[in-house]
Image 1 (cartoon, protein in one colour):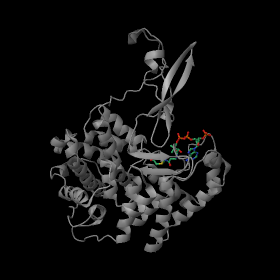
Image 2: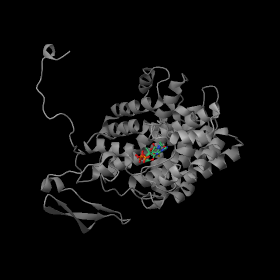
Image 3: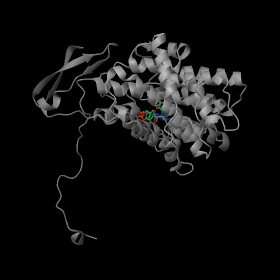
Image 4: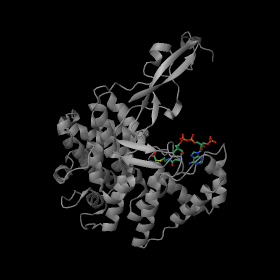
Length: 431
Ligand code: CMC
């Protein structure tokens, strides 16, 4: 909604720009006409001040530690909803009725298997191939096996491609793990719900079924809810950017998976466990480690700390920490890495370096401890994040593709290279 304006003065001229207000009263200067009128563009490395779109899916208030999906607070969803219900909410905008949820579940169950020929694609990966690489490649491959859904945009029928992709990504994810460990692929079980079925495909063997403990299924389901969307983060912005070129859902999500892989984004959950394990093995004092992290020339960061948007506690981290304590107590697990994590957190939260920069634990700080307790191997942590984030990616893809005003994303730049150079044949170039 436009209800105010801002004035920019440059080179003796004045430009009035509309100020847009969102439903949570956040304000933004709409610079859509700036270049045409003034020749100026804005420069915002890392996009810390740039709103790339207007979106009705998720609201984050980093100063107050608030996260809501479609208006519903994360605290309520994480304790009362299920991952599948939350996914429906994100993708379709409303909590489902009983009939809608049944239909969504029916399509999920009907599509839990992947085409038999996709198995040969898994064989093409070398041993120990990273599961995130396999996941991204196989989601794109999946599109080739479902050509009808590559064109999917038709709003009324969107439940079909959305549920199919959600169902199959879990089968692909489990298969990517089995492949990377040289284990036989396990078929899904239609009698199991989404999360339990995933654990079955991860851990069952042809000669021994894995029966998941309810506590474990519940903990993983809640973790998936917490990861389900987070507005314009790196991977979601990637999905939106690819979608803006009118690329299909599979290609857009495959790109999002690649963006999520990086250690500053979804890969941080692996980096946290690596960091805690190194600290446990080396015996380095935690105080000394924190001093090392703070040095300007250090390439070490306190992984799982800090967030571009949250300048207070990440609300997801608070929920995860509690869930972590509960799960470990219930399973009777004593994890020395949890103790290190808690001591490290205390040191950091009392250190002026972290206080001044408003660096708090983020969603990844404790999630790895939960995943370890569940028995998920470290190389699968980011894959689990991807399964959790998929409903958000699908919701954003749909939002881009159903917005009649959507344009291809194409940022500008300030060029900083040589002005003009004459081509010299190789023989004439100075040695
Ligand atoms: N350890 C030590 N110093 C840090 C850390 C950290 N984890 N995070 C930020 N800083 C410092 C940084 O060096 C800078 O200091 P100075 O002002 O002296 O130059 C200041 O805090 C601001 O940092 P920044 O890198 O400009 O902040 P950013 O918004 O660009 O980066 C971040 C955000 C999440 C990439 C960063 O905090 C980080 O690298 N954290 C560790 C990785 C991590 O946990 N990532 C998961 C993020 S949450 C889940 C997700 O999005 O996937």
